[in-house]
Length: 440
Image (cartoon, rainbow, N blue to C red; front, side, top):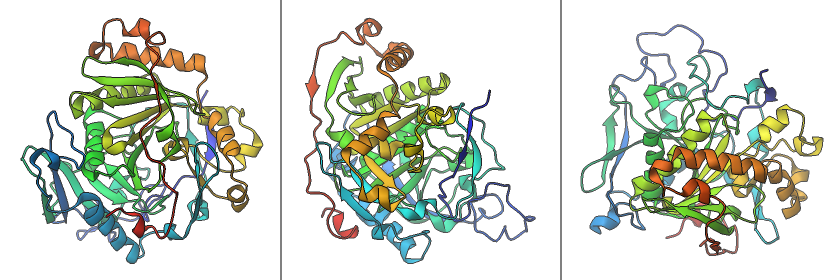
């Protein structure tokens, strides 16, 4: 049986369509300045080429290795500067800086945002939730159909000792570039999409190379308030074209403050812990002898979930130093009619940002009545049961056992109790305009 639910897809591009593009192609292109063969020849975009690192991950990205200043500051000057430019050019569907935002009183400090623009002018579609891995379909909307004006820059790693920036670099069609593009329906200031190897048209599934790229982006940003997120199919990804999301929010996410209990440390130095006292059960990964050690353990865990058809969400936090992994079941419960009408009426799809504690609300009454209890009740429906999570963890540890201490599978729930609050200083919350929230 195919599980499906009526979905309202998030519009991430001004060119998004559910059907195939209309009209014939012309020699001069399709007229939309897209990222397909009709418009790509001769196209140029800025290029940020970061340094591929070895064993050192510095506070300010790869520049800590050489103690050099980058030619362009990744977050403040490049990403946010280009994002602001697109806002001035009117490419967004609404002004996200005008959305009301507040920190909900309570122990965790859940963040509520009233974003009525995200559910307007959208078209219902049938969305399968029973398959995490689905083949790429070029007839559906994908990121090669976005306009080049929505792309901020190319993002690639090189073996050079220093970062390079090229303001007008030709797009190498033969070596598919990874790009950073705006999300035209932003959740927050600086909301962008990282699209690995965009011209390869990869489906929404994590692989080692793409996840390492996302981790490098977190490191290059060098700011703990810039996080990246990933939603698998079945966990509220709405576009089956490989992409990560990222944005800047100058307040801690509740998940970043949740305590954890150590399970084990891999032979590569990656510490794996259970998340405690939080409505959504999951794992947190941190450390590693090198960035690639951390990346491989997490990506292999994601690959395991994909291959076992388990929907999941990922949050990359603390400049790439901590990664949260959440297997989830909300969409499945929704399809089976197991979610209360009260929760369904909110129209909140609990993806990575909501799970992390940033509740994007679409109705004014939900925003006005927002409470820690309401947030907890919604997120508790997302979580696997303790028993089911234990089964999932055993699958993960078996899949990554080649990187683990030999006794890991039997130690999953028996290792030392190491409960530690996560390191993130509390802030007073959201103050002032969004641009002023970028620390100097």
